[in-house]
Length: 140
Image (cartoon, rainbow, N blue to C red; front, side, top):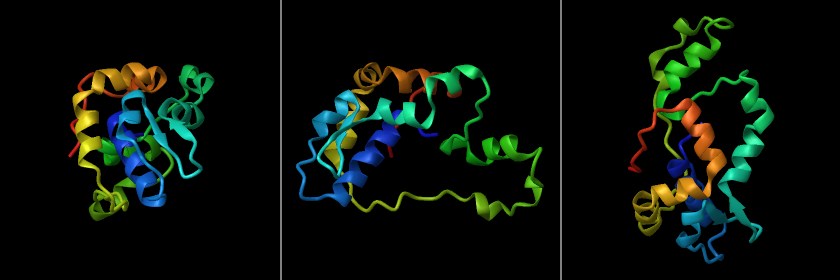
């Protein structure tokens, strides 16, 4: 699982790289939206509902692996099934996004409008609040 600002920025730059002919308007990010390769306007909350449907979320039978706490969460989730202590430390090294496109304007828009973005994506905000503390992340 990723926090909304990080996921939204990553998805926006991924779509920019995948379909450079489209006019990717960073202003859409303020409402949790972005252009997809198909020219459809994608919405972050739709993806979160797809990844984690409300019925499953409310069942209480959910474990997530947060990107920012990967080793800790992976170990907690799989220690009963795998000898996780035997996994070499370097296998938990940070993986970088392979998207080579950046958008400083989008990064700035997201970082300065976090509250608006979270209000626009109430389901993602709810899911995130269940698995993260209330502090927000800062995009690198």
